[in-house]
Length: 379
Image (cartoon, rainbow, N blue to C red; front, side, top):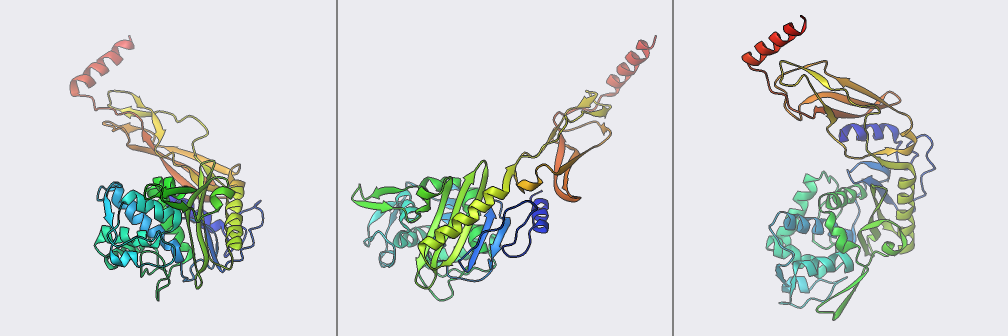
C-alpha cells in the first residue's frame, strides 16, 4: 500500500520545489544548494537538487547512530557495555570530548556524546567497539547505505571529518534519518537532550541542534559543519501524528540552515496530514457455506496512518469490494475483500479486508442434522 501512496504522491508532485497539490501554498524559497523534505516512510514531498553528491560533515553520524541502535535492539550490544578509547579514536579532531587513550565509558554515555555534542572521538570509538576497527565499521556503514537504497553515498569514516570521497546526498541523508527514527525511535531520548554531563558531571554537553528550542515538535536529529561541507542538518519534527524530515546540505550560515529547515517543515505540516483511512460505512458480514457459523464479521487489515495532501482529504472516493460468499473452512485473517481509495480517478490506497472470525467446516453429521432441522421448520 505504501508503494501505491508513493506513486499517487509522485503523480501529484511537480519537479524541483514546485507546488505539489491543488490548494497548497507556494513552496518555500530554499537558499541551500541541496535540500529535501521526506516522510518517515521515505517518500519525498519536496526537493531541490536532492541527488547532488555533497559532503555531509557530522550528519554522517546519523548512520553511525543507526548501526549502534540496531546492534542494541538486536542484542549484539548493550547500552551498559564498556567501550575503551583507542589511540586512533582519541586522536580525532573537530567536535570531541577529548577522550584519552584507554579511557572507558559506557555505550550509552558515548552515544549521548555523539547525539548531543557531535563527538567525533566517541563516534569512532563506538564504531571500533562494534566492528573491531573504524575501517570495518565504515564497511558496515556502506553496506547499510546500500540496503537502504542510498545510491549517492560513499562513507570513508565514522564521524564526518573531511575526507576524499566521503559523499552523500540530501535524499540519502533523508533515507537513513527515516530508518533511524522509524526503526529506533528511542534515539530521540538522546538527540533531544539540551544539556547534560559525562565523567561524573565534570564535562558538560551542549546540543549542537539549536532548533530543539526554537521549533515546536522537533524530534532531532543531527547537525554538521565543516568549511568545505558548509552548514548541514537533518531536522525531524512531529505534529498531529505526522513526522517529517527536512535535510539541508551546504548552507552558508547557521541562520540560513535553520531558516531553510524551518521553511520546509512548516510547508510540510501546512500541506500534509497523517490520515488513518477507513470505510465510511460498516462492513457487512460475509456468508459462509457449510460452515459452523452462517457468516463471518469483517475488518480492515491495516490501520497505519498515510501521509496525504490536506487538499485531498475531502475529495477521496472509497469503494468496498467483498467476496459474495466464502466456503468453509474460513481462517481468521483470511482476505475477503478490498477497500479501494481513489482521488481524481487515481488509486491512492488498497486496504485488505479480512475475516475477523474463523469458521470451521461442518461434518457430514452436522450437515445432515442442519438439513433435517431446515426441513422440519417448513412444516
